[in-house]
Length: 283
Image (cartoon, rainbow, N blue to C red; front, side):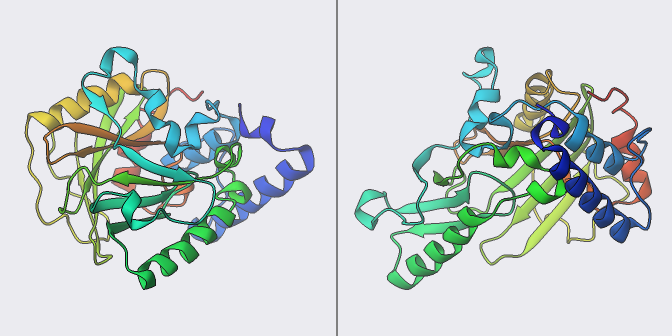
Protein backbone atom coordinates (compact mmCIF):
# COMPACT_ATOMS: atom_id res chain seq x y z
CA UNK A 1 0.00 0.00 0.00
CA UNK A 2 1.03 3.64 -0.52
CA UNK A 3 0.18 6.73 1.48
CA UNK A 4 -1.95 8.01 -1.39
CA UNK A 5 -3.91 4.75 -1.17
CA UNK A 6 -4.35 4.84 2.59
CA UNK A 7 -5.72 8.36 3.04
CA UNK A 8 -9.06 9.51 1.69
CA UNK A 9 -8.79 12.46 -0.76
CA UNK A 10 -9.74 14.92 1.98
CA UNK A 11 -7.31 13.36 4.47
CA UNK A 12 -4.52 13.25 1.90
CA UNK A 13 -4.89 16.95 1.14
CA UNK A 14 -4.71 17.84 4.84
CA UNK A 15 -1.89 15.45 5.76
CA UNK A 16 0.28 16.35 2.78
CA UNK A 17 -0.18 20.07 3.45
CA UNK A 18 0.55 19.57 7.15
CA UNK A 19 3.70 17.55 6.44
CA UNK A 20 4.96 20.09 3.92
CA UNK A 21 4.33 23.01 6.29
CA UNK A 22 6.28 21.25 9.04
CA UNK A 23 9.11 20.59 6.61
CA UNK A 24 9.26 24.23 5.51
CA UNK A 25 9.23 25.42 9.12
CA UNK A 26 12.21 23.16 9.84
CA UNK A 27 14.31 23.65 6.71
CA UNK A 28 13.08 26.94 5.20
CA UNK A 29 11.79 25.34 1.99
CA UNK A 30 9.16 22.90 0.84
CA UNK A 31 10.25 19.35 -0.06
CA UNK A 32 10.64 18.56 -3.72
CA UNK A 33 8.33 15.61 -4.36
CA UNK A 34 8.58 15.80 -8.17
CA UNK A 35 12.35 15.37 -8.42
CA UNK A 36 13.50 14.65 -4.86
CA UNK A 37 17.25 15.05 -4.47
CA UNK A 38 18.05 15.28 -0.76
CA UNK A 39 17.68 12.32 1.58
CA UNK A 40 14.87 14.00 3.51
CA UNK A 41 13.05 14.82 0.26
CA UNK A 42 13.24 11.16 -0.73
CA UNK A 43 11.96 10.01 2.66
CA UNK A 44 9.07 12.45 2.27
CA UNK A 45 8.36 11.03 -1.20
CA UNK A 46 8.40 7.48 0.15
CA UNK A 47 5.82 8.31 2.83
CA UNK A 48 3.22 9.19 0.23
CA UNK A 49 4.23 7.38 -2.97
CA UNK A 50 6.43 4.43 -1.92
CA UNK A 51 4.96 0.95 -1.53
CA UNK A 52 5.13 -0.58 1.97
CA UNK A 53 4.10 -4.01 3.12
CA UNK A 54 1.32 -3.67 5.69
CA UNK A 55 0.60 -4.33 8.48
CA UNK A 56 4.14 -5.63 9.04
CA UNK A 57 6.08 -2.46 8.21
CA UNK A 58 5.00 -0.52 11.29
CA UNK A 59 4.45 -3.32 13.78
CA UNK A 60 7.34 -4.24 16.06
CA UNK A 61 5.56 -7.48 16.91
CA UNK A 62 5.85 -8.47 13.23
CA UNK A 63 9.52 -7.56 12.69
CA UNK A 64 10.56 -11.21 12.60
CA UNK A 65 8.52 -11.74 9.43
CA UNK A 66 11.13 -9.70 7.51
CA UNK A 67 13.86 -12.26 8.24
CA UNK A 68 14.22 -14.50 5.14
CA UNK A 69 13.79 -18.21 5.98
CA UNK A 70 17.38 -19.00 5.00
CA UNK A 71 18.69 -16.50 7.59
CA UNK A 72 16.68 -17.62 10.60
CA UNK A 73 19.46 -19.83 11.92
CA UNK A 74 21.75 -16.76 12.03
CA UNK A 75 19.50 -14.05 13.45
CA UNK A 76 16.40 -13.64 15.59
CA UNK A 77 14.45 -10.88 17.33
CA UNK A 78 14.74 -10.29 21.10
CA UNK A 79 12.29 -12.66 22.84
CA UNK A 80 8.92 -11.08 23.62
CA UNK A 81 7.75 -12.32 27.02
CA UNK A 82 4.44 -10.44 27.16
CA UNK A 83 2.12 -8.42 24.96
CA UNK A 84 -1.25 -6.78 25.55
CA UNK A 85 -3.62 -4.16 24.17
CA UNK A 86 -4.23 -2.91 27.71
CA UNK A 87 -1.91 -0.78 29.85
CA UNK A 88 -1.84 -3.20 32.75
CA UNK A 89 1.61 -4.67 33.21
CA UNK A 90 2.06 -8.30 34.21
CA UNK A 91 2.43 -9.09 37.91
CA UNK A 92 5.88 -9.62 39.33
CA UNK A 93 5.33 -13.38 39.72
CA UNK A 94 4.49 -13.65 36.00
CA UNK A 95 7.84 -12.28 34.75
CA UNK A 96 11.25 -13.65 35.65
CA UNK A 97 13.52 -11.16 37.44
CA UNK A 98 15.72 -9.26 35.02
CA UNK A 99 16.02 -6.37 32.57
CA UNK A 100 13.41 -5.81 29.87
CA UNK A 101 12.28 -3.15 27.41
CA UNK A 102 8.67 -2.00 27.59
CA UNK A 103 7.60 -0.78 24.14
CA UNK A 104 4.61 0.25 22.12
CA UNK A 105 4.32 -1.78 18.95
CA UNK A 106 3.37 1.12 16.69
CA UNK A 107 5.96 3.88 16.57
CA UNK A 108 9.27 5.34 17.62
CA UNK A 109 10.63 6.61 20.94
CA UNK A 110 7.91 4.82 22.88
CA UNK A 111 10.04 2.54 25.00
CA UNK A 112 11.56 2.35 28.45
CA UNK A 113 14.11 0.07 30.07
CA UNK A 114 12.56 -1.66 33.09
CA UNK A 115 13.76 -4.11 35.71
CA UNK A 116 11.52 -6.77 37.17
CA UNK A 117 10.29 -7.06 39.86
CA UNK A 118 8.60 -3.65 39.82
CA UNK A 119 7.71 -1.66 42.91
CA UNK A 120 4.21 -0.20 42.98
CA UNK A 121 5.30 3.38 42.32
CA UNK A 122 7.27 2.41 39.24
CA UNK A 123 4.44 0.18 38.01
CA UNK A 124 1.89 2.99 38.33
CA UNK A 125 4.14 5.44 36.45
CA UNK A 126 4.85 2.93 33.67
CA UNK A 127 1.19 2.05 33.22
CA UNK A 128 0.28 5.71 32.95
CA UNK A 129 2.96 6.27 30.32
CA UNK A 130 1.99 3.10 28.46
CA UNK A 131 -1.68 4.16 28.37
CA UNK A 132 -0.62 7.41 26.70
CA UNK A 133 1.39 5.42 24.14
CA UNK A 134 -1.60 3.26 23.27
CA UNK A 135 -3.81 6.32 22.83
CA UNK A 136 -1.33 7.95 20.46
CA UNK A 137 -1.98 7.74 16.72
CA UNK A 138 1.68 7.81 15.91
CA UNK A 139 2.69 9.55 12.70
CA UNK A 140 -0.69 9.58 10.97
CA UNK A 141 -0.93 13.36 10.69
CA UNK A 142 2.59 13.69 9.24
CA UNK A 143 2.42 10.90 6.66
CA UNK A 144 3.67 7.87 8.61
CA UNK A 145 0.36 6.14 7.97
CA UNK A 146 1.63 2.53 8.21
CA UNK A 147 1.69 2.72 12.03
CA UNK A 148 -2.10 3.10 12.00
CA UNK A 149 -3.21 0.01 10.06
CA UNK A 150 -3.21 -2.40 13.02
CA UNK A 151 -4.28 -2.38 16.66
CA UNK A 152 -1.40 -1.08 18.80
CA UNK A 153 -0.15 -3.22 21.64
CA UNK A 154 2.35 -3.05 24.44
CA UNK A 155 5.18 -5.53 24.60
CA UNK A 156 7.95 -6.56 26.96
CA UNK A 157 11.04 -8.01 25.36
CA UNK A 158 14.00 -9.33 27.25
CA UNK A 159 17.18 -7.25 27.20
CA UNK A 160 19.56 -9.31 25.09
CA UNK A 161 22.48 -7.36 26.54
CA UNK A 162 21.50 -8.10 30.14
CA UNK A 163 22.46 -5.35 32.54
CA UNK A 164 24.55 -3.57 29.90
CA UNK A 165 23.04 -0.62 28.03
CA UNK A 166 22.15 -1.68 24.46
CA UNK A 167 23.90 -0.13 21.47
CA UNK A 168 21.66 -0.14 18.39
CA UNK A 169 23.63 -0.73 15.17
CA UNK A 170 21.61 1.02 12.44
CA UNK A 171 22.44 0.14 8.83
CA UNK A 172 21.14 2.44 6.09
CA UNK A 173 20.60 0.22 3.03
CA UNK A 174 19.84 2.18 -0.14
CA UNK A 175 19.43 0.27 -3.41
CA UNK A 176 21.61 -2.46 -1.91
CA UNK A 177 24.40 -0.14 -0.77
CA UNK A 178 25.29 0.73 2.83
CA UNK A 179 26.78 4.23 2.85
CA UNK A 180 26.42 4.73 6.62
CA UNK A 181 26.11 2.83 9.88
CA UNK A 182 24.66 4.75 12.81
CA UNK A 183 25.34 3.73 16.39
CA UNK A 184 22.77 4.86 18.92
CA UNK A 185 22.91 4.40 22.67
CA UNK A 186 20.37 5.49 25.26
CA UNK A 187 21.54 4.72 28.78
CA UNK A 188 19.40 3.74 31.73
CA UNK A 189 19.76 7.36 32.95
CA UNK A 190 18.27 8.72 29.73
CA UNK A 191 21.53 10.07 28.24
CA UNK A 192 21.72 9.61 24.46
CA UNK A 193 24.85 9.06 22.34
CA UNK A 194 25.39 8.73 18.60
CA UNK A 195 28.26 7.86 16.27
CA UNK A 196 28.21 7.64 12.47
CA UNK A 197 30.46 5.17 10.65
CA UNK A 198 31.06 4.31 7.00
CA UNK A 199 30.64 0.80 5.57
CA UNK A 200 34.22 0.01 6.65
CA UNK A 201 33.24 0.92 10.24
CA UNK A 202 35.43 4.02 10.28
CA UNK A 203 34.11 7.14 11.97
CA UNK A 204 32.82 9.69 9.47
CA UNK A 205 34.39 13.16 9.63
CA UNK A 206 30.90 14.60 10.13
CA UNK A 207 28.84 13.60 13.18
CA UNK A 208 25.53 14.39 14.84
CA UNK A 209 25.21 16.92 17.64
CA UNK A 210 24.86 14.15 20.26
CA UNK A 211 27.93 13.02 22.21
CA UNK A 212 29.82 10.13 20.62
CA UNK A 213 29.10 6.60 21.79
CA UNK A 214 31.78 6.19 24.47
CA UNK A 215 32.75 2.54 23.93
CA UNK A 216 32.15 0.08 21.12
CA UNK A 217 34.08 -2.67 19.39
CA UNK A 218 34.25 -3.72 15.75
CA UNK A 219 34.55 -7.44 15.18
CA UNK A 220 33.27 -10.26 12.97
CA UNK A 221 29.71 -9.81 14.28
CA UNK A 222 29.57 -6.27 12.87
CA UNK A 223 30.67 -7.54 9.46
CA UNK A 224 27.98 -10.19 9.67
CA UNK A 225 25.43 -7.49 10.55
CA UNK A 226 26.45 -5.68 7.35
CA UNK A 227 25.88 -8.81 5.27
CA UNK A 228 22.56 -9.55 7.02
CA UNK A 229 21.36 -5.98 6.49
CA UNK A 230 21.94 -6.24 2.74
CA UNK A 231 20.11 -9.58 2.59
CA UNK A 232 17.11 -8.43 4.63
CA UNK A 233 16.87 -5.20 2.61
CA UNK A 234 16.75 -6.87 -0.83
CA UNK A 235 13.00 -6.27 -1.36
CA UNK A 236 13.29 -2.54 -0.59
CA UNK A 237 14.81 0.45 -2.31
CA UNK A 238 15.52 2.12 1.05
CA UNK A 239 15.34 0.97 4.66
CA UNK A 240 17.26 1.33 7.90
CA UNK A 241 17.86 -2.00 9.62
CA UNK A 242 18.71 -1.99 13.33
CA UNK A 243 20.58 -4.75 15.17
CA UNK A 244 21.73 -5.49 18.70
CA UNK A 245 24.68 -7.67 19.73
CA UNK A 246 23.58 -9.83 22.64
CA UNK A 247 25.60 -10.82 25.67
CA UNK A 248 25.54 -14.32 24.13
CA UNK A 249 27.36 -12.82 21.10
CA UNK A 250 24.34 -13.53 18.88
CA UNK A 251 22.94 -10.91 16.51
CA UNK A 252 19.36 -9.75 17.14
CA UNK A 253 17.16 -7.82 14.73
CA UNK A 254 15.62 -4.77 16.42
CA UNK A 255 13.43 -3.21 13.75
CA UNK A 256 13.14 -1.94 10.18
CA UNK A 257 12.61 1.80 9.74
CA UNK A 258 11.28 3.14 6.44
CA UNK A 259 11.22 6.87 7.28
CA UNK A 260 14.31 7.66 9.37
CA UNK A 261 13.67 10.80 11.38
CA UNK A 262 10.28 11.15 9.61
CA UNK A 263 12.15 13.27 6.99
CA UNK A 264 12.77 15.90 9.68
CA UNK A 265 16.35 15.16 10.79
CA UNK A 266 19.04 17.78 10.39
CA UNK A 267 22.27 16.34 9.03
CA UNK A 268 25.46 17.91 7.68
CA UNK A 269 25.14 18.39 3.93
CA UNK A 270 27.96 15.89 3.40
CA UNK A 271 26.02 13.19 5.28
CA UNK A 272 22.81 14.01 3.41
CA UNK A 273 24.65 13.59 0.10
CA UNK A 274 26.20 10.33 1.32
CA UNK A 275 22.75 8.91 2.06
CA UNK A 276 20.99 10.34 -0.97
CA UNK A 277 23.45 9.39 -3.73
CA UNK A 278 22.93 5.59 -3.72
CA UNK A 279 19.14 5.96 -3.39
CA UNK A 280 18.76 6.53 -7.11
CA UNK A 281 15.75 4.23 -7.64
CA UNK A 282 12.57 5.26 -5.84
CA UNK A 283 9.77 2.74 -5.55
